[in-house]
Amino acid sequence: MNQNIERLAAMLRSAKGCVFFGGAGVSTESGIPDFRGAEGLYIEKRSIPPETLLSHSFFMAETALFYDYYRKHLLFPGARPNLAHRSLAAWEDQGLVQAVITQNIDGLHQMAGSRQVHELHGSIHRNRCMHCHAFYPLEKILDDSEAVPHCSCGGIIKPEVVLYEEPLPADTISAALESIENSELMIIGGTSLRVYPAAGFARGFRGKLAIINKSPTDLDSRADLLIQGAIGEVLGEVAAALDRQAH
Ligand code: NAD
Image (cartoon, rainbow, N blue to C red; front, side):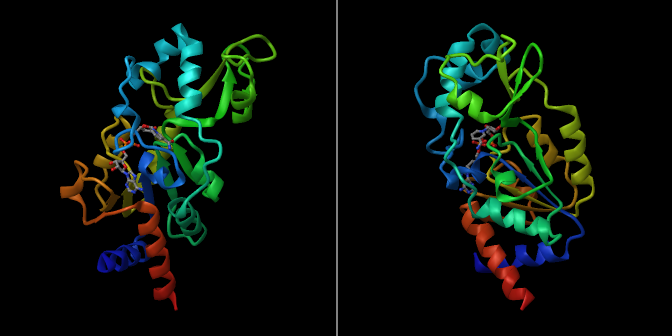
């Protein structure tokens, strides 16, 4: 483990351009459950599967039920960035990491201070009226006493979160692909790499690849460095190793 930490620190220092690609596992140490780990939502016995509850057609047909599920299972307003988010933000400041590509919708990378964050699946922090497109922050969804939050114009408010059946935002895809093309190193962490098309981004990468995940991923055999562990702990140790190497 220690050797791998030192190796990742050295890879980070020597790479011309590094991009981090992450998923739900990056936020589990902040108290937000992932979908596929041991405590994931998929193992809860539900008559309507999450893929249906979180689909565009379900939102349109059963908006109140959607919001009930969404508020209970996807919103964690008390969650704060962990060592993984904070290390990545510090490395952006230090010029070691150029961008974070995330499948998460929780906004914790920005809360930690990262600026170049490509949110492939949108964000719970951005909400818009479907009629007049007025913007609403997360608080509107949290504090609204109605089952379905409405705009002052009367339109229904929809989170800017990519639901099943919806395409990924084109401008975010181009920005994410550009940051991948400009990177010699990709660190993948906290993702099962099973959700497409997002996972395809990582598969197309041809540079040096480091994977940090609690459970095996389909890309493990392609990785130059593989660390099985909790990403907050691991990145925290890499940050300490970088400090040591600098002194
Ligand atoms: P996933 O749930 O499919 O996989 C998470 C992976 O992270 C698993 O392989 C698990 O073993 C690993 N993991 C869990 N905790 C970890 C830790 N502390 N350190 C290292 N690895 C850890 O997640 P995914 O691949 O991102 O796909 C799920 C989809 O659900 C995404 O599209 C995402 O948008 C959405 N989602 C987002 C959030 C969030 O915003 N925080 C939470 C749940 C789901």
